[in-house]
Image (tube, rainbow, N blue to C red; front, side):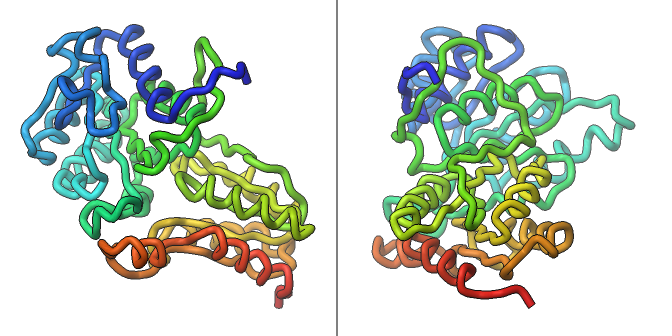
Length: 330
């Protein structure tokens, strides 16, 4: 890396500035994203640089915003729709699921939907059940959508730039706790392709798979495990669709044990699907059953103590690793 440190939100902003300069068809709409620069300050300065025709504040109407974005993409534009909370994307699910995701197939491959929906999810700050969900599994389930969940500033920039060059709809899911985190981001052109996982920490005793805000939490656990003499490999898929199955299977074959960590509720989650892939394709590599550490099957509480208890913490990851190290496959 270059040694240049940026916040996660600054890396996203830099990607937007660079891609809007490169492609005049890119425009962005959302609530408070123009004059205020967005609630998380990702779009700060874009209005002054690119004007109100390409950086537009909208009414509080997510269904309309998403409909405009999908329609504009089909008509030849390259829209970015920013939704304040992923929870509110539910208001536009018909456009996302029944239009954007299916248009290319239904036109025999001739139609394009270069649509990027940027939003954030996850817990943090006690904003309660309707503003704290991790809903990536809903989009993961829909053929035709790309699902991206960067955990670091460098990944956020590289993946967003790649997303803005795709002909397909991309759900770009950020996390409210990551915007102020910092990391090295090299200067110059930076493109990170979808479907390529990243090993955030090398290890030999157990593979820890995590994404979004669970990556820094899992890295904290891996550091403590190292002090106990346990070498944990931390793998970040970066994109859930497409998923780098090869990297996952290679890591599991190396360590022979696996713990998957997701903030989302356990039931119907992506961790369960990844676990099934490992069980089906790397069963004989396993020395112990795959363990999943996930959120409780409950709406997120407003109370901060209960909120913390409802999603995985560092100690939960450590406990799961200790469990797989002391268990054996049947």
